[in-house]
Image (cartoon, rainbow, N blue to C red):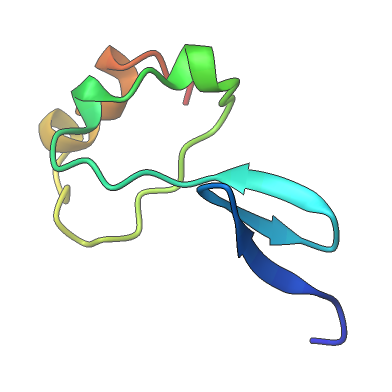
Amino acid sequence: FHGTVKAENGKLVINGHAITVFQERDPANIKWAEAGAEYVVESTGVFTTIEKASAHLKGGAKR
C-alpha cells in the first residue's frame, strides 16, 4: 500500500479520509446514524448470527 495511514483524534485516517472507529462491546450502544454510517463492517467474528449482528441495526446502522 503506497498511501498514508495514521491514527488521529480517535479516527483512522487513510489517504486523508477519516474513518471513525469504536471500542464498544455492545454495538446497540453505538449511535451509527449520528456517526454518519451507512454501512457497518462487523469483523470481530463475535456476531455470527442474524440476531446478534442485528444489534448494529438497533444502533441506527442502515445495513
